[in-house]
Length: 597
Image (cartoon, rainbow, N blue to C red; front, side, top):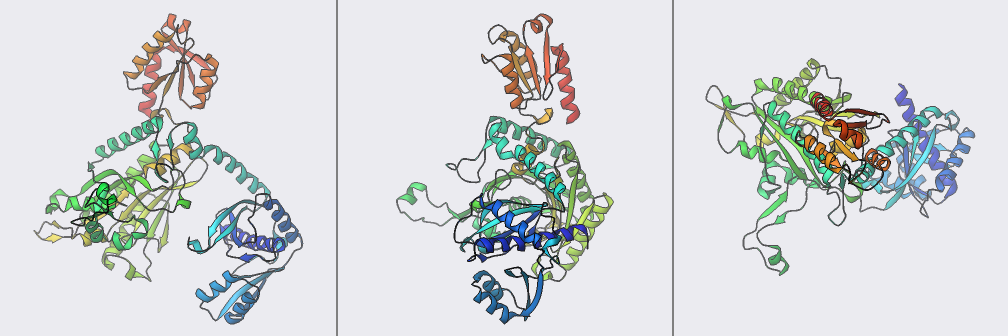
């Protein structure tokens, strides 16, 4: 057993100790489930009153008392009927439901800890006394529908973190304080990058001027790099007919993430008057760009001489998300995918995969991400019937993905059963400056759409043949990627993609404004993103405001600078001011931007 497995057992045992403490505080408590999770554990409760934050220290105190009692975790294997009788008598409906609907074994396992008895497979520690009571902390209370179904009752979930010892807990808490400072939702508001207004719609992002500029810089870079790498650009609508989504299979297989059809056979006015469409036309907001790209391919018969085709699009898609699961830029209802589809022959697959892997590596490095984990998602060999495509196709695709991953030196983790139904894939999770993983790039095979849309090309023998189709996204979605960038850099972006690169600070807004405008024009003519602070505030306050805005360079302009044709340069995060000729600064920032790009 490795250290991580031991820690998970400890966390699961702590969940039982929490439940024991809750039972002491609320003898009538009803218990849901309490698993170990990343960094800690939680337990769901049905309680006679709503918990408040002040309850957490009281529960922690009770937990520590239970730990000191050195109570054993007693395992008992009993008949399922006896377990049902046990939990019915104890008035535990959620345990009874699990036993009635999920547990099919004749015998089940229960664990006893003091006054608490739980339906649980374990394993657990031998006793509560094995736990360092300084190594965990209850963190928050949240609502959670029983079994994650909003039709069920809302339970109260108590979250906690737990580690091997106090030092690890303190280290984690320090990271969380830093993470709070870097929260993209907080910084997005402070730096006026983006906003989500309930009056506009939950999960729909609006970009303010600086955020829109950040988006444009990143998107322009994306287009430039794709054209350099042999991609062609396509653009597709935000909606597609019902027939399109029925053909693609999304109508039946992806309907949980799609919005209901739009009736486009009449106007809003006609609908408000109660009129009926003469001819029914149903369209759906697109959850993916893929079927449109396939439709473009099928506009005419293709030849092997045209392949590979690499078609790319920054296309906005819309997916249904429950309102309670929305979160800033990382979980939204409308987002822009940096999609591309590579349509190629079997002989071209390996080379195309290598090119994409190199492209992903280049993009990550450009934005400062050089540490990432790759996951190779394979189909479940015991459940082949739920996957599109032939055994031969899957064996080839999985084999070539693994071969290329090895040859490109990817430190990948293979996961059986994690493939999409339409094909195997490589998923990339980048690590930010705090070591947090973020799902970004993905590279996937698709056996589904080429079959459903009957995609073909004429091979060298003059015969029709099915092409291979690769999906890939480098950012994943612009929104999530930009959220990751905001948090990784704490809003202090590198100069090459900072929305504002230079802030001009005239000492006197009247006396020095003419010279300031001259410097502005010189920088702007060279495509440097520059602003002027022409407020009547003191130069000290202007500097402080520019620091808050996390501008890479501040140029102080006063009498001496006018006399010398110079600028007084203050870099972000530095108290030093360096005097240099205006042309010298221009050359310096141009070289810095070129080098970082």
